[in-house]
Length: 361
Image (cartoon, rainbow, N blue to C red; front, top):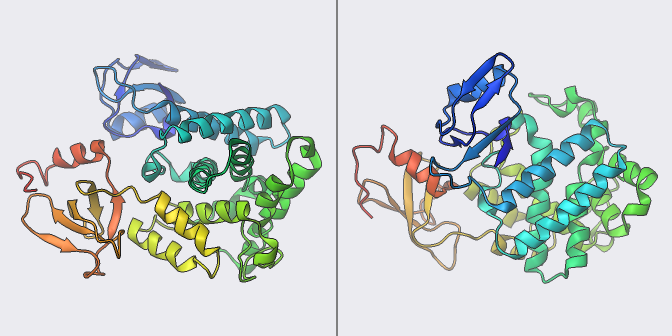
C-alpha cells in the first residue's frame, strides 16, 4: 500500500524500490529505520509503498487506506477551502468509512499511531470522524444519520484554515488575543460551509461545525449556549474531539497517558457533555481484554491479568519479565500510557532491555 512519508515508522518494509531526485535510494524489502525516514525526507520523497513484513502482508487494512485518503482530502481542503469537488470526494470517503467501521475494521485504540505532530489538524479531523462514527453506531443510528455525523466531524475544524499558521502551530502559550482568534474557528467554519457549500450539507452538519466547542453547562464557546440548544450529534463530535486531542501529541505538549485521558472524559459526563453520551463513548473505546499488552506510565510493559468490573480502565497488570503484578485501581501513581499492538510488543521484546528476558505470564 502507498502511504505518505509522514506515516512511515521504523519496522515497516518497502514493497517497491524507491528512487529520489538524484537516483536510487532504497531497494524492495528493506526494513525501514529512522535514518531511512530522514534520508527519504531529505530527498523529497512524498509517498512510499510498504508491507507489514517482507513476505508481502499489507501493513494496514482497507480501513487504514481509507483513513489516509480521507486525511489527504482534508489537507487539500486546508490548502484551498473553495474546491467543491474536494467536499464531494470527502463525503464519498465518509460513506466508505461508515461501511468499514460497521464491519468492525476500525482499530480505534491505535488511531494516533501514525500521526505526526506537524499533520495534527488533518489527522485529528479524520480520527474525530472515526470516533464519532463508532459512537454513532454504538448509539444505534442508521446509515443516513451516521453520514451526517461523519461529515460534520470531518469538517468540524475546517474554520482553522482561516487561522494564521503562526497562531495555529505556536509551540508555547497563546496570548489572550491569540486564544480569542483560535476560538473563532467554529464560526469561520460555519461561514465557509454556509456561504459556499450550503447545497451539499444540512442543518445537522452545520450545527456540529458551529457548536462542537459548546458545553451543556454554558461554559463553551463561541456563544455559551447550554444543553437545551446543543443537539446529540454535536455532543458526539465534541467528546470525540476532546478525547482525540488528549491522546495526541501537539506542538505545545505531549499526548497524555490513556488512563489520564479516560479520567478526564469520565469527569465531563453530566457536567460538560451529556452523561449518556460519555458513558456510551467510554464503552465504545473499551477494547481492553485479559491478555492485552499495555505500556504503563512507569515505562514497564505488561499484560492485563484481570479486569475489575468497578474500574475497567485500571486493571491488574502483570509485568513482562517479572512475577510482579500491579493493581492500577489501587496504585493511582501508575496508569496505562497506551494499549500496545502486536507490532509494538515485537519491537519491545526485540529491544535491548527485553532481549534477554523471558515473558513470565
